[in-house]
Image 1 (cartoon, rainbow, N blue to C red):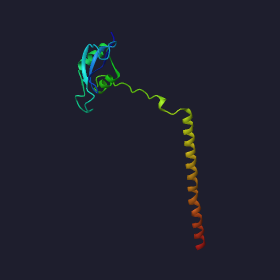
Image 2: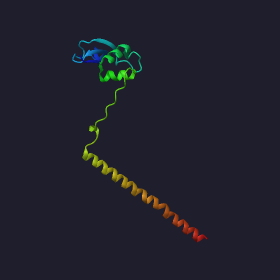
Image 3: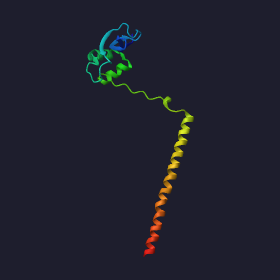
Image 4: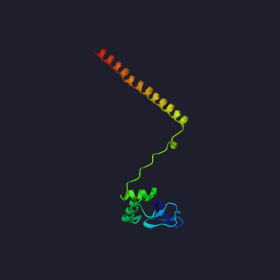
Length: 142
């Protein structure tokens, strides 16, 4: 029998309340469970101490027996330092623009840098040209 430590939903419509339970992985979400090991009330503020209640000794027992926590419960256990924090999954590349759009962006960046360099080059030459008439004026007065 494979055991999972997971959430079982309770509460009214739009007012969720969860029990943290140890259940057979094949049972339905709100179905039969082996033992209740905590509660989670998402309606409370994040800094409220009653938001998550865990029975640490029972959770440690079930983890030692081989129960696997669900993703959400693993985050709770990591925050409570009962178990190791789960790794953050890497972001997929689906949020990035496609190949043609990336090429257009690259061309636009190159055009912008070329324009910036062209604008910077005359600005550097201008002070040198202004300095030349001042030197001529000094030579004439001397």
